[in-house]
Length: 249
Length: 211
Image (cartoon, rainbow over all chains, first blue to last red; front, side, top):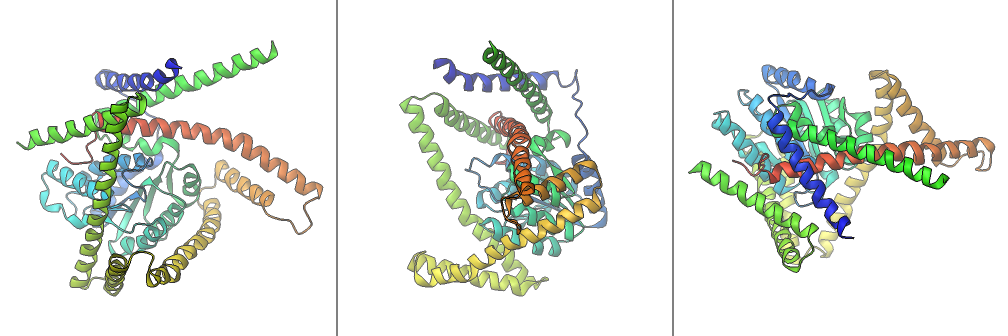
């Protein structure tokens, strides 16, 4: 019983240790990740948008900060800091929308910090981080107006979504925008596979920071995730074999 | 000074996060009470943030109205509706008859229509997928979706025919073996990604609260 109680904290301590270890090893042993077409094409799409004077839109989803589904939106905020820096010199900097007031406030804080770092404080506008609507479908209903009025050509959906994500991605496709979309909900991921040009499946939604070079800990945490996943898969396989052999004996 | 403040916010976020996490794993009354209070405070702040979000929504649309940007009449309608329902809700309560009529006559049908639109959108997107991404996985995806649809809906020839029973068996095998196994694998990755994201906030590597 005590061993079971200690298992959770032990895994977390191992996770933190692996992240810090890989962060220290990062310079001597650089990470090589598998190609993710959507995230690799994002940089070029943002460059095209900046040159054409068009807007990048990032949606943080319809989840709340206090909910259990806030993690993908935090991954979206990490990507936002990089995207904001990339569009800081544009006439039309990135616009962020969310379905939660607290998430919109966090988006504004992230934008302000990113523009401070890029020495482009004048680019910050409090209306660049917006709460669109408080319910999932009213949020989706409000998106076409934002996409059309702001001349959006890069439409990123990185956050917690339900089935409304299919409409949100489809509105971007109709606008002929570059649509990159990922969420934590497995059914919504299936919808995105059909509706988005560049869907992010599974943990790929959390890997954006590592692929966009947000910081060393992003790359380190992705390597730690990969190692832990390998350990878990190995444990499952060993357990299955042992159980099967135990049944046979 | 600014750097010190930034470090202070990072320290506060890390300590609060660690306390809540510790309360989850170590079941002592003090940690449970402290964790509960901190989560309660976060919910309270999220409530205040909703008001800030509404203020933000108003300021975006009032700006559009004042500059007469494209689609400003819709913004005017939104501001009027927002203020009208807010006044109704604040003074007469959210369950007063007028507010209920507004909800049942406008909000509910609009959201139900969007749900219906979803089915049409997905059907069109299925066709578009085949024309846009002609690879093996896309054909497998659409084929499996059709098979599951066939095995879920009623058949005009009745539900006792051999073909129908075969399709039901194949659908169950796909859903319970392949789809469930794949879904568990994906969920494993999502859980690890979510944990890593939370840990980066605790380690103050990610600072969504600003620097």
